[in-house]
Image 1: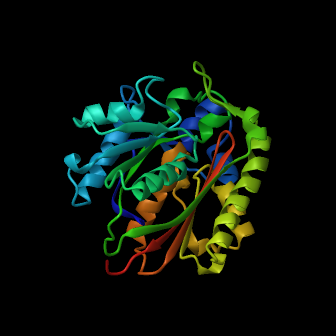
Image 2: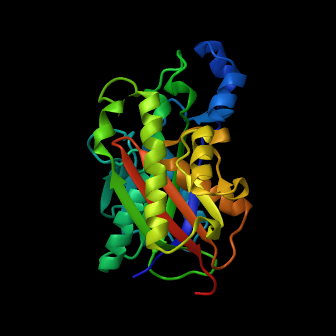
Image 3: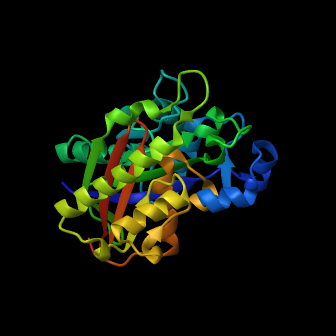
Length: 315
């Protein structure tokens, strides 16, 4: 069976953390942050919110933009690396807050979790066992970030996104053509979020692996689908930082006008960044029937993943 997107939702918290806010604490100027990272501001969830709250808000938004009801969801997946707790799963917590009890499962591939989740959802739809899957991608990394230095605190923002997936076609929706996942486990020691503490990374090593992983994953899927980069209507990468994304797009041969990004306004939202960008930019720049979009993501582990979508015409 083919997997189609039946509805989408995004939630970004209201509180903005600007470069000027961070420059007073980190010792670097706002101009330096924007020049080197391409990020101007990021969002932070309220102190009493957890990842599940970001997920709940994005599911409700997706339902409001679909013909589904809560009762239609027969599987709930949550892609996150900042769970509310080790047990229960954040997907179960989201289900409980929504007042539903479908099977629930967390997927942790760090910032590549959205596309890993797409792969899981697509395979389960293909099995015929599930027909209405809500895939949530949500992360709340500001809880695990120190803003008192010029490290990871400059990158992170909080957010949630949700896609509703089904095997029936829908006019003007996105069709998942194919997906690919991989890992570069030899680099796993260069980034970490311990059970207690703050997130850390060896920045130059992460960048080295990320550039290679991004390009390899994108090219693998494009070659398998017999699609050339110039045939893409849009490219969406993991929203880590704009300068890295610009390097990736240039190496892949994607022109700037087809490179979709929102990291400059929201920061690195972990697994939520790529789907939130795909959703928001496709609202601003509606796709036409037959146009293709490539999503390529990279996460701690290191994990790599790509998904190719096509905008449908009539069902």
